[in-house]
Image (cartoon, rainbow, N blue to C red; front, side, top):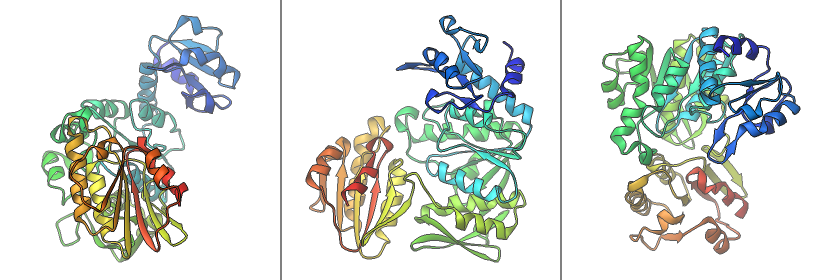
Length: 426
């Protein structure tokens, strides 16, 4: 079936779905395959659950006129998404980066939705499957699309741009994330900069942090729109005020108080303000959007339990974000506790990077530090402030009931560590 024909059928459906557990009436189901699953075996179940069509790539699953047999389901999903993006013809804002992608995406969406009907990536569905599903979630009511793009190897951002064809782009930063897949920081920069290459080659606009020398260097030939301190030569001036306890900043005649902790979130806020300014969102509406946004899903959440102020940042971690979180913790008042879990996807750099975090953490004015995970447990250099546990289970066994009087507690680790489980111990 040609993409245009499939698109006509797609337009009669409610939405695209790849999981039979979330099927709703009149969805179109894409039977994707993975190392441990084969969606073709669930095609009949999807139709029984209410799907209007099931797109399959195995003849044995072709059981009715509602199953659509194609050569490759994943490729079909991606081609359909790109076709749908062209069909809608709306402006697409894309973003990537080593840290802060999802928070920045949520802030941009909060700001732009003050004036426009927007559709943004849900959660962190930002890979070769998530980007197509995001595009297919947009419809004729969508005025601006916001697409988050993630990557753990070269050419992945380039491929996402090929599908989404963004008109605008922003890279949050370049840091030590997914070092195992990329093969080093320089290749991280190269991989993320694939977005710059696409936008530059197509004459599109890039939003740039004027105080990031790498961003400035990489966009010298591009059409850029900059932000930074108001006393610099930038298109939008945003000034940092403080981050005690939440990040606040000044924009035009407004002081904006966010619900985000850590001065590392300032650039995320400034980028959202800048993009809102570019799209002519009213200043007061920008202020309302930033001040109304409350982080969720274990991302820089502030949770109060008894006398404890808990900074729950357990969605993900890499050396760059871990360092920023620890420096922010040191600035807090009163007793400071760090409960840190392993950082994943660091490859051959894992031992070196975990050692560096241990050295940093023990050098800071933090009262008690707990390190959880095999990588941290393998670090031999530590002080009396350090307590090591090879696993969460080992930590839980020794600390079934945590209690610190009037303490600020940072909980941070990679997603696989699931350190939000620590909350149950208070």
